[in-house]
Structure formats: structure tokens, C-alpha cells
Length: 342
Ligand code: TXA
Ligand code: MG
Image 1: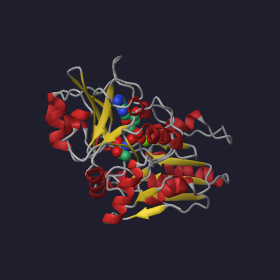
Image 2 (image 1 turned 45 degrees about the vertical axis):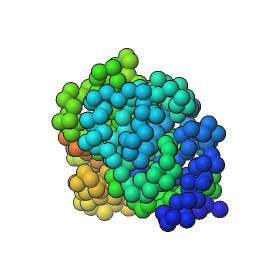
Image 3 (image 1 turned 90 degrees about the horizontal axis):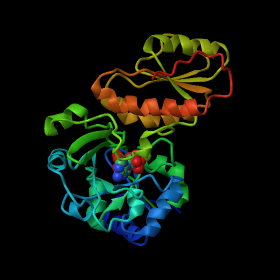
């Protein structure tokens, strides 16, 4: 039986005990829900990979309640990392740092670096403080699928397999944290998130964005990730309505994620207007994609989002979802001119 806990003291105690026993605890953060394991418990860590269906080589983020025990996890904290932590923790920023000796290699995927983050969600803070150690937590979804932004998404995905699910309501931000590597004297953006490139640059000056030969691997940033099961394509704003109308006329059920309402009514189109505000768009993106995925459509068309920096994280996740769809093309109607933008 899955226990849904709100964080009363008794429930926190249950979650902490579960972690100590090597069980998994799903918990809310301000970005997405995490699937938490005692970061020093090999059995618990193995269970995370098993349950997610994630390859062992993909490292996990260690969540801490504050910077106080950071040196247990990172052997060196470069000045740039200190500044970033000072400015953005607690919050949606993950730092990749040189790994401290003694960190379980299951956490780091055998790499010499470690990803750490201090989340700001009050319930995550409560849990981390009560637990008193590091909680390794990937997003609480099966490998390659959409991240959960509500407790019910975690329940839908894992059911009874996760003993404790802390329900902290909807995640405030809705997209995974910004990941920044502070290694070898450079600062490099590995995954865009709510903390933007210009915000990072204001704090540390130069921030690289292109991967280098020595860059740490960020397995979650390649290929089939953040994807609904329904094939998804990104379509320019001017074309989306016509394309949806045309496909609907041909009898295909089509799902649309747009930033405005449709101009007409179409028999086979399920249309979501996600609006033009980036915060709200990001907040609802995964929930919308989940809803459209369940609508029984042949494909999901997403209106191309604006090109400015504030939309970087949204654009990144949409691009990956579209790339995953190319890897598994729809089996019907290959005559379609559905443009997948680069
Ligand atoms: O917002 C978030 O970051 C959420 C919440 C739960 O904190 N977590 C999350 O975890 O998105 P996950 O496992 O789904 O994605 C973590 C990403 C992966 O792409 C992983 O490859 C990368 O972080 N990563 C972890 N350790 C790394 C390291 N040492 N070097 C480079 N990338 C690393
Ligand atoms: Mg993930």
C-alpha cells in the first residue's frame, strides 16, 4: 500500500526511517519530484536504477539541506561554485564538482565528479534536515519519460513500488534544475533550467555552453529523454493550425500544445493553450504533455516557443522530446510534412 504523507512529524519520521532502511522515498522539490535514496546505501542506490530502468552509468544528483556538509561530497569547492551556491541555494541549481573520496561510485556513475543541489521546497528541506545526510534523487519517472510535477504522477508511474510518497502539491517551477559544472577553472552550463545563463554570468563572469572533450557526461541530456509516448513534433506558430486542421480532416486524432487558442473548431483535435508566459508554460509543461499523451492521439504538435533566453529550458526539453520521437517514428502516414525543427 502506498502511503501518501503530508509532512507531519510522524510522517517525516516514517520517511526518514524508510531512507535509513534503504527504501525509496519520493519527495517534492521546487523543480520536479525526486525519487530519493540514502546516498550512502548501496542497496538503496541500486534500487533507484532498477526501479527507473536507468543504466548504472547515469549519475545521480545528491540533495543536501544546506552547504554545511558539502565537503563530505565534493573534495574541492572552486570560488565560482562558492559564489553560485551563495547566490542560488537553496534553489533550482545543481553544481557538478570534483567528487570527494568515499562517495559511493553508484552515485557518480563511476565518474570523478559529483552533482549536488540544495532544493528550496519546504518539504524537501524538512526531509533533508530530518534525515541529516545526502539524498540521491533522480526525477521520479521511468527512464526517458516525463518528469513528475505532482505526487499523483509519481503514484501513476510507480504505484506500490515506492513505499513513501511525500505529497507537497504541484512543483513551483516544473522543469529540472539548471546544471553547471565548476571544474578545472571553468564554469560550464550542462543543462538549462530556471536559473538562466545571464543570471549565472552576472555572478561568475564567463560561462561556457559548448561541451568540451573533458566535459562530464550528462546522460540525461542526450536523445530519448523527457518524452511522452505519443510522437511529438515542433511546428512553427504560423503553420500549426493549418497542419492540425489538415490532419484532423484526414481523420487523424491530433493533440496540440499551443500558446494561443485555436481559431476554428476541429473534430479530431485536442488543443491546449499553454499561454505566453514562460513561468506558467514551464510550470504546466509536463502535466500538459501527460494529458495530451493520454488523449489517444496519433501525434502531438507543439507550437515552436520563442527564441529568447527565458525560454531556453522549455525549448531544450521540447527539442529532446521531439528528438525521441524521431528515434521512434509514427507507424502511420509517412507522407506528412511535419517539421521537426533543429
Ligand atoms: O531538478 C532536478 O535536478 C531534479 C530534482 C529531483 O532535483 N533531479 C533531476 O535528476 O533532474 P535526474 O537524475 O533526472 O537528472 C540529473 C542529471 C542527469 O542528466 C545526470 O546525467 C546529470 O544530472 N548528472 C548527475 N551527476 C552528474 C555528474 N557528475 N556530471 C555530469 N552530469 C551529472
Ligand atoms: Mg530525469
